[in-house]
Amino acid sequence: MKVPEALDDDLGILAARRGVSKSALIRDAMSELVARERVGRVPLGSFLALAEDLAGCVEAPEDLSTNKSYLDDYGR
Image (tube, rainbow, N blue to C red; front, side):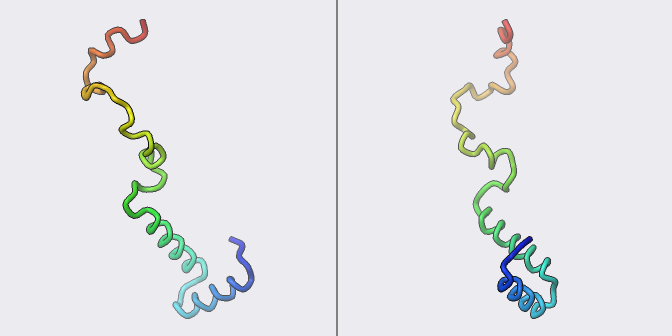
């Protein structure tokens, strides 16, 4: 990951202070950011997260997915 030299220097100082590598410091910071954005939402990358604006927008019989009688004329 490319960062400005001044930021790289600051990351090096902070990583040394904490006794971790810069990579570990950056991974932790990124994990915290993603966790904050995810609060109260479906996990990122799930199908529901990608289609959350569509979930529940269709009116249909409650047993549509289990009642095979709806398929009687399908394909004709």
